Structure formats: structure tokens, C-alpha cells
Length: 412
Image (cartoon, rainbow, N blue to C red; front, side):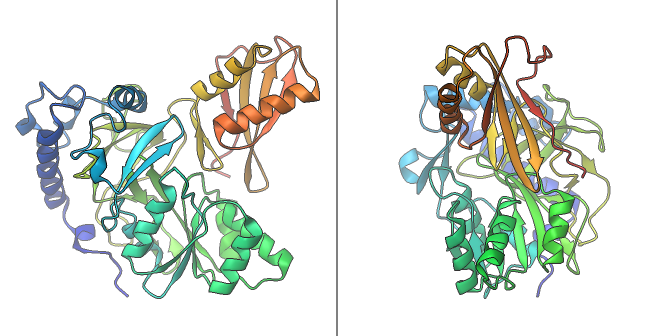
């Protein structure tokens, strides 16, 4: 079994950088007339990381505005929408293109690093409906040759039954949902011991949860990805043990910048993750993710020579991910505006056991069950995940500017 997916994973930094920036200059030439701020950039001068900051930062809010003005993709693709195989819509709404081209989102490296190969059966529990996560994972899994069970989300009893009957060897989905399936399998008396590998994303993988899986004989690695960019970085392992940090994918250029700016920080300093995607169909240049991370020194013990990051370390803004879905301050505002009785709202996110939970605290004089039930339905519609709603007295919420409070402890 080969340790590495291809020779790109072990090439020198010099060769990697030369190839990536040659490709970047080609892409800049293709979209210079459409991408914001690129008209006056001397493309030939973008030669390395030191010159990359002369390109403007593209924030998700700008992407939303571009798409509104030029639907569905804001003019940022190199071919018309009709030439893509899929058009996805994530919360926001944000539209993303999709292609059936082999490993178009580049997840094969993450699956290969986990140990997934031809002959394996992977139960894919990411959503296939509107959002691209399900297809992203399936594309990578098929690229390494394994069989995919398109489980999607929900229907836990059926998920456990499918996992048992197909003798699935792998799982892809959010970190905590595999535990839900396994516990349902225990409850039903099903044998799910065939599962030995899990690739998770869409939320934090807490050490205690990883250990729970290890105790069941399951190697669980996480990857870092977004609907816009595809795979950004992924964990690796040696002899079945996860290694420190995440390897940055060969198809992107990653920077760590001071939050709110485009200025790179020193290696090791925590800052905002900015990614340049070298996807020839949908290049996103210096796309600010809003996520925090830091560059790790040296090379990984797995032998891959690419840049390493610590992984996801929180948000540079108040935007947070709950049960695999981002919740942002404008969504909280949308809930408030739909209910005139609400003067102010605050989302408090926590962990119970190994699952995300949240409560939306609303300042309102209307505290009857019917009111909170109505707000709960609005929250589920806007956030795309369900949580509790608690009505509190006027002035009860802290006056600290926070709309989303994340109380989860990511180091525990």
C-alpha cells in the first residue's frame, strides 16, 4: 500500500511554489476582467508568497454581493454556468458550481491518507441536498476506488442498518454523527465492527470523541474544507496514529493573515486563513475564510513535504459552525426581524456529551410557549439546524456586543 497519493506530496518547496504560482498567473489572466480588484494588478509580478499580498482579499460578503449582481456565480468561473454538472446552494444563499470531473474538489488525498482504498465501502453521511458536501466527499472517495453508500443526513436507524448490512469499512460525515449511528447500532444489536476508518469535517473533532472512536478500533482523521474551496488541509497518520497538524492540499495556496487585513503574519502566529484555489473552473483568489489557524514548523512525520497548519482554531469573527452548519450574525438578525416582539437575541453554543447544542436567548415580553415555539420554527428555517429558544426579560442579555457566544472548549 503506497504511503502517498502521488509524487506531488513529496516534492520540494521550490518545485511546489514554482508550479503553483505559474498556475496562479494563468488563472489571474483568465479572470482579471471580472474578479474585483484585479484590473490593475501586474500579473507577471505575482511570483511567490512575498508578492501575493498585492492581490486583494475576497471576503464571503463580497462573494454574496457579486453573485447577487451576476447570478449564479458572480462571474468568477472560467466557463458559463450551463457547462457545470451541478449548481449548489448553501445557506446565505451562496451558490457553488460542481463538476463530475474526477476528484474535482480534491478530497482523494485526505481519503488516501486515512487508508481508504479500492475494496473499501464508505458510508457518506454528508448532505446531498442543495449543499455540495455529499458530492464533494463522494467524488474523492470514488477517486481512490472505494464503493460509496450515499447515506446523507438523518434517518439514524436506517443508517445503522445500512452500515451493518453493507459491512461498511469507512465513514464520512460530521464528527459526532458517527457516534450517534454506532450507539443506535448498539441499541438495535447490530454488528458495526467493520467500520475501522472515519474522515470527518464540518465541526471540531474533540480529543475525547476521537478517543471514543479509537476505543472501538476506528481511526478518525479530520479534514478542513469549505463549500467554496473544496479541500484545504487534511490530517495524516503513521502506523494508525494521527499526526500533529494538517497538511495543506496541493491544489491551494494558503496564507495566515492578521484578521480583518490581508497582511501575512509570522509562522506560528495565529491569524485568519486565506486561501487561493487553483481550480481552473472556479478559481477563488485570496479568499478569506474567517477561520483561525497557524502554520506549524517543519515537515510531517508522514513524509509529506507540504505546508502544515494547526487545524481549525476558531473564528476570526462571531460566525460559528453548529452541527456542521455555519451560523452567522445576519441569520440571528433575520430571526429577530421576523418577530417584532424580540428586542435583542443572543445564540449560546455549547456541548452536551459529544454533540453540539445551542439556545437562542431572546429579550421579549412575550414568553408564552406559543411564542417560543414560533421562534423555534423560524430558527430551524433560518439556521438549518434546530435548537432551543429561551425568552428572557428586557435588559437581561449582556451588553458586550456579542450576538453569538461559543462556550465550547476546543482543547478538551
